[in-house]
Length: 435
Image (tube, rainbow, N blue to C red):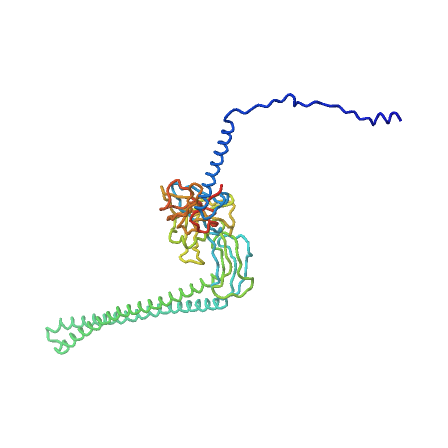
């Protein structure tokens, strides 16, 4: 019981504070005036700032955060006018083979097969062309025999004509000798004068017949030569017709015009096709080009030989515009870009790529980075930033590229222009920009 009583006993100890040591110090004279002036100066400064902000706010139609905008500076330099286009890798040589006549197709290859130049790809069966070739061959052989027969007849006719000429010449010589005998004895009065005159007439008659026979032989020779020439011309026409029929039959055997592989098969084996029907497409991957689609707005600026940069997975390759379509399809103009030097490695047929056409270089021009403001303002206005206020300013643009636009008038070098984010301005004249 004593222990419990001791444990519950509380002990109170009193500790004295330092109030006896504190001393009151009086402020120096004028201290309150300084504090009051400081407070008044601060209030005036805050009021001036507020007034400036209120004045600025009242002068602008809206306020936009600077973090939502992209601002660029107007500079002077060389503007490379270019255009970014899409394209795909295509084979520079990709011939499509067609059926030359209605026929049945016997395929010798399958899609994807690698073929060599001259290899048989398909054989077409056309009974009509085969019959035409037989008829033309028969006609040629018949005319060939006719020409040989005509040559024999011509020689016979020439021989007959020559025989008559020779006979007439013999008769002339005989009459001439008879007249000479009459001349030798006529002076002696042995023969009658009338017989002598008959001998002279016979000589003249023989001379006329010999002359005509000789001329007739020459004419017969010319007639025979002309007849043979006519037959030979007929034979030549028949030969050409036969060769044409043979060529058409030979074309029924479809051969590869280049080395490559079968890209597309348009027919199946033993299929009947019409004339000029596509059979297959052969692709030569050793020569690839880029087929690009250029917007119609650039069509007037395009020209063969124009430089281009093609962006590939392996890097950037350069090339030149090698072909240009004369027509516009869906507001696009098709063009071909041929690579400079060796063909880049790793290209595949129909691979999608992007290209940059280098249209023109304009040195020493005012320019600013390109942004959405070009399209949103139609290239007629730009927001120039001065002292935190973006003012809508009339401008005139010139050439454009993918990264910059030329400024013809309305801006000067060093101006700050809002190139992105103007869609929130709603064509306001002045916009306050909050930092």
